Image (cartoon, rainbow, N blue to C red; front, side, top):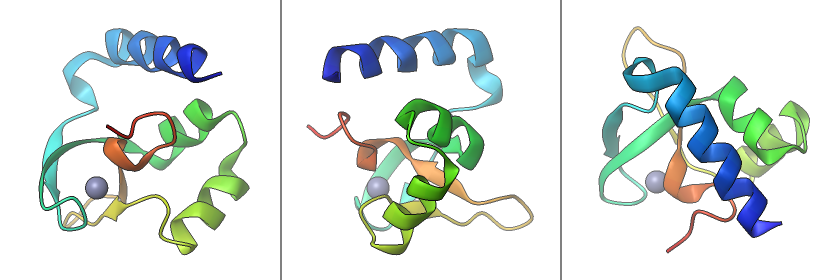
Amino acid sequence: MRRRLKVTITKIRTRTGSASGFEVFCPVCGGQTETLSIEESARLLAAGRERLEEMIAARLVHTVSIAGAPRRVCVNSLPGRKS
Ligand SMILES: [Zn+2]
């Protein structure tokens, strides 16, 4: 399961290139982190948008607010991405 998630992340990164996955400061991690859109993160989880929103509400997944842009999800906080 963990391995499959990593493969999926690699594929999405390759496909979206620099248009997404840009780095921002995550206050929870306390450093620069790559981020994904809510939609991309829900796709990675394979558990759906609702489950992702639950995890965000429970603070299991970090979100970063950027002025004038939709919420971004901290890649470090996604399951299988913890170091
Ligand atoms: Zn974070």
